[in-house]
Image (cartoon, rainbow, N blue to C red; front, side, top):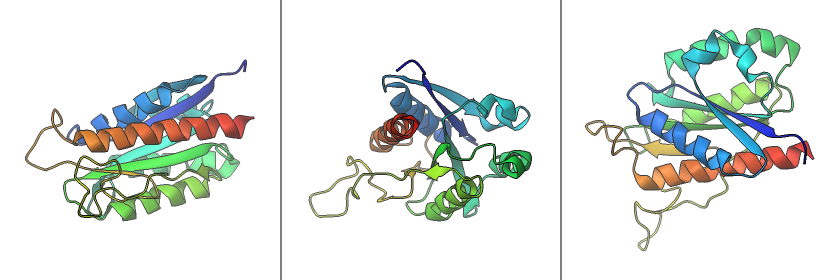
Amino acid sequence: MTNVIKVAVVYHSGYGHTQVQAEAVHAGAQAVDGVEAALYPVDEVTENLEKLADADAIIFGTPTYMGTVSAPFKTFMDATSGIWMEQGWKDKIAGGFTNSSSQSGDKLSTLQTLSLFGGQHGMIWVGLDLPPGNNSSVGSDDNLNRMGASLGAMAQSLADLGSDVQPPQSDRDTAAHYGTRIAKAALRWAE
């Protein structure tokens, strides 16, 4: 293959926890041969959306605040209306991840918002391909996909612990797996 597949990870992180998750998604995508991944804080791309024009896949990440995406991430979403009008992201691969301090924390609502956003742009959404973890008597918090997500990657970061220890390693590993999955999907889609 002569062309390199480009994966952009666009995220907002209020306290550093979602950034840790974004870095894991990025590492998972970057580990795939033939893929070049870039990590973009949402503030960096909201003012310069051209940075995303050449991406073959865009993975969206935001903490879940009050049951949906954070305000800075929503500002980014709204800033893409010109791209939407031109269908500039049509047929790009898309995915999403989120983090909150509660086990549920209404994270599914955030992933639904992100997938709808991708759908409005005509993007191809890729979900998480892992069975639910920690859902039986032999499971543990060390299982991949311990949050039991399907639409994207979820993480939990306890509110009283810093991003040096949260989210836990299983959620970081789930995020890396998801980044790899999306990168491989972008490679297949480009064939």
